[in-house]
Amino acid sequence: MRDIEHKLDQVDIDVRERIAVRLQRAQQVLAQRPKDKRQLDALHMPEEAKTLTRRQWRWIKRR
Image 1: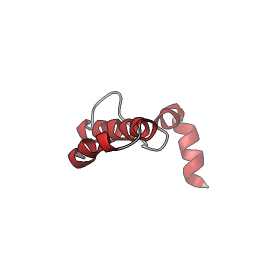
Image 2: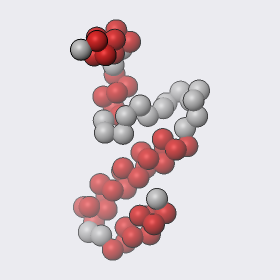
Image 3: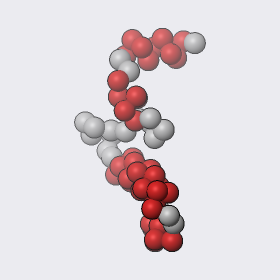
């Protein structure tokens, strides 16, 4: 990840912002502990993963 952070200076601004968001999420996943309150459950859509209730999750798993 450090290599990517160092190479961000060479990339366009709009691409840099998108990569920075993903890097932040990856760092959060690496730093979180099993009992943390605000864990990221999914990197692709973390805000969507937080909204699923237990019943909805069971229904999705049964499919």
